[in-house]
View 1: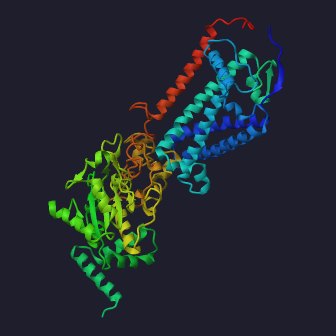
View 2: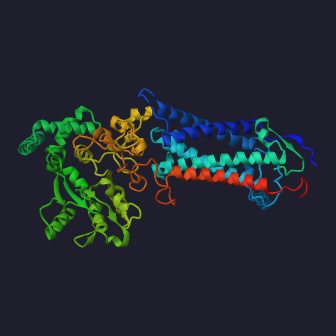
View 3: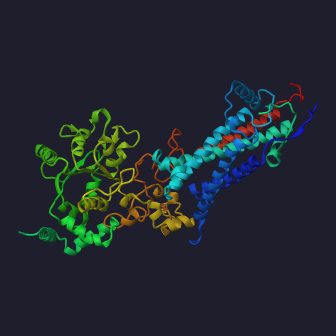
Length: 221
Length: 366
Ligand code: SF4
């Protein structure tokens, strides 16, 4: 028998907004970044400015992404319990146990879906890793940018990394981690779809509306 | 009694006469001084000061040491087709010891080096070419029975200043490439207490060596350096930002294969692995061999030879990015990335299929 589900407001506006800014800027950054690393469109006349535009879009998207990350971090402190980054650190005994159950579910060993209103334990841990990568991408990006933009701002945002890592190495990891983010994106979309279709919890639409459909028996956070 | 300005004039005339005997005219000499002023970004009013300084009475003593090297920097300085920079500088200095070109050998050679260190302590300049091996007490490079590191500590440690020329002497260079069998390092790392200025490059540009010495003669001190010990006048700008092909880069016009249309048109060498975007050097403006050409002008991408991470992070030379550590010889970042994407897609697919074929229990059956 289907359980009765009710509408519950989970994702507040800043959470949804930054989610989509992140999504769009990651898309733009990956596309232009791939071009900058490996130019796949070639100019037919010298008055074109393809690399120039790609770099401009990359830099604008980079600033946008950084701002979005800052806003989201701020909202972690100000928003509701589902916005908090506490779930990024699911290292309590209880959460570790949940994580194990969840792994069993995704590996098709058990059939008990994780039952939680906000992020699951495994989801939280994944977000921690993804956020570390986000922050490395921002720092390494500004490190590369600082090479031609001398100024305290860029030194603080990333220039300091040049003293620790060699430029080609920074460039290599900046590039490689893009692929990791793209792989995460694929898995993220798949899991959301999987959860939505197997639990009828409205997760997919909730990132637009903010509302999930809950049974009331879920763990809250 | 003559005044001191008469002295200077007299010495200048003498030097110019001796240069004239070697085929360097007064005009050549002024061209040299003007060139040096331009290279050091000094205003024209400094040209007479430079002329005065380099022809002035004091002939600084210089010793030139070679360790794990190919003598390429020596070659670069000496093999000029007409008597210019290199010879001028060698005339201005008193080169008391230079393994490749000095007349004495054996005991006599060792003695001249010892004499300099003992008699001119704290007053002579050293040029070091080649890296210094540190592994196994430095046994991999010995001269006259003493290890390079031992000699460098004594000679550079007692010098007024050391000019490390070439990438080997500055950051270890090719001998320090992985797996660095001899534990090769640059001078500053081997002798941390020495005053060292780094002029990396493979070879270091003779013009930059001269300008550094001229700066010292004119101002009595070495030019200001960045945190890697390189003088700003030569290493303050990135190759990519001063490159004559930069317009093609911004436009999106790239050579994609050696000898293709783009390559023949002189388009940007970025896709051929040019390391101009990560290399700081004045090659595009000063060029090599008396301003004749430089790698990118000749149609080959920059290989980043003057950067501290050369060779390891600058190879493969014809790829944009270095190899991915731990992924074997042929791995490029994009191959690893494509592999990751494929693995992710395969994982998702496997999961989807797994779920589809696994019979589901009735809802609420758990
Ligand atoms: S040839 Fe090299 S240095 Fe010149 S613009 Fe292209 S990438 Fe930059």
